[in-house]
Amino acid sequence: MDGPLKLMEFDDAPPLSFVEAPDMGKLLDDPATVARHTLMFNLLVTPRPHDRSAQWQTAGGRGRWDAEM
Image (cartoon, rainbow, N blue to C red; front, side):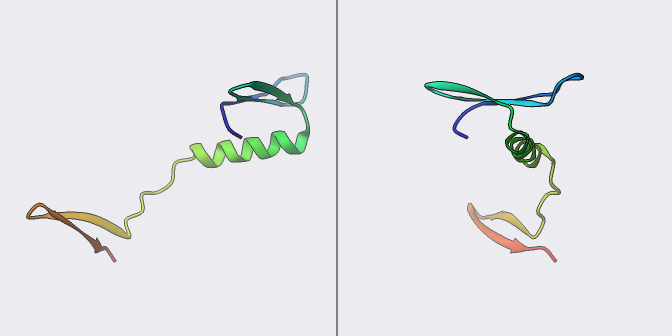
């Protein structure tokens, strides 16, 4: 996908996805494609725990990475 995505769900019809590019737009109704778009969207917007394995430290104007265990 190269542009915006809109996922649409309906009470009385199967879900759809609409993808946009600079020169076109496509309304997609293939269940596998809509499911893939939904999965990609959910992976992008689902909060993840902050990675605390490394932390940027600033000391004397210079930075360094310190591991936190």
